[in-house]
Amino acid sequence: MMTKGIRGAITVEENTVEAVKQATIELFEQLIKANNLKKHLVSHVIFTATKDIDAAYPAKFVREEFGWNNTAFMCEQEMFVKESLPMCIRVLVVYNCEDYFKPVYVYLKGAENLRK
Image (cartoon, rainbow, N blue to C red; front, side):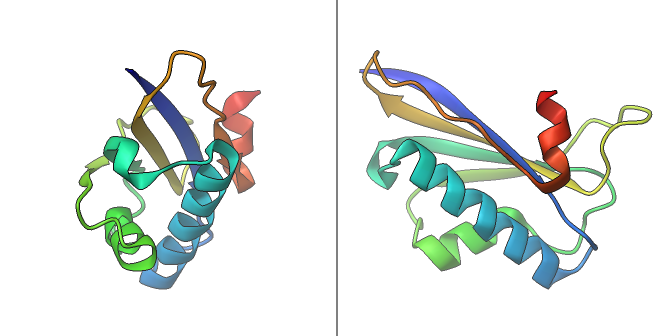
């Protein structure tokens, strides 16, 4: 077994609890589906958010919606870079897997521009 990182990101329309919740759930649902994630194989999850998002912690919604209560989460502020994408939540899922596993990264809404 080895460990691989699965990245993803999504933008939110506004800095509200509901907007952060909806974006986090949408992003995580897509990550789970695209990678067929099994929560018992997740080592830990790191969320970052740009400095303009401070209404809620994204990890809270993964615990509530998906029942990932035994997974280690961290929520951090994304490094500020001039002219970077605003209103963005990023995630890194650290996954225990076989060598042949190929992570599928998920970039939604305005975050799709991060991969161009």
